[in-house]
Image (cartoon, rainbow, N blue to C red):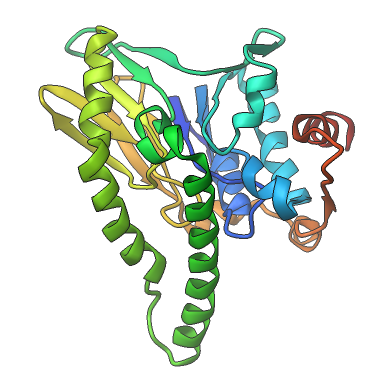
Length: 289
């Protein structure tokens, strides 16, 4: 029987639940396969921007939170959900706590004991220093629409490549890297975040937002980005010795998904302008079997 790997900490970000591009089933399979003492959901877990426009909250999106709750029940996992720019609707309830194991807040300082002594990491989604998101929200929403279309084109293009017997090619990743390079050059995203960690007297930064998984040193501090669950399907994991690694989803993590779950995963409910997103989702997660 498959044994779950117990990590001290798992960090996931940028699931964008509620969008067509979200790899919700893969993220759920990942959490079914790996348990942890502390789970940090580092922003853009729920995509409020898309849900407000033409959102459908599907059973596979609810299933992700069901697995999070099971981690709490079976492993006494502490869950910290940090608000991102796409789930900014959470501003209406911050700070929020359910019991002693589930908190929603804006940022977090993580203590990480290791062989060289305890280190502290400032954990934030990362949109705080994105000049487009912070100061020109209309342009950020326009860019989000463009990225959604790009993912749709990418899906069709790769269906064609599969038909031709060609390997997967991330058209959207290629375009995104060029665009993000320009944005990073203007806003100095990574350097500003590491400097923010330094200002908080931390040894490093843990973020998401730009969908680029990474672990590296910047100006003497550790920079870690958990990636995303739209394309990269990656997470940051900390073992019990305080070592950090990037861990990617693999197909064997889906072994525990039943046929019934697969068949009903795409069923969903349509959100309206009159229903607060958080109310609908809380109802789905906590009241539906």
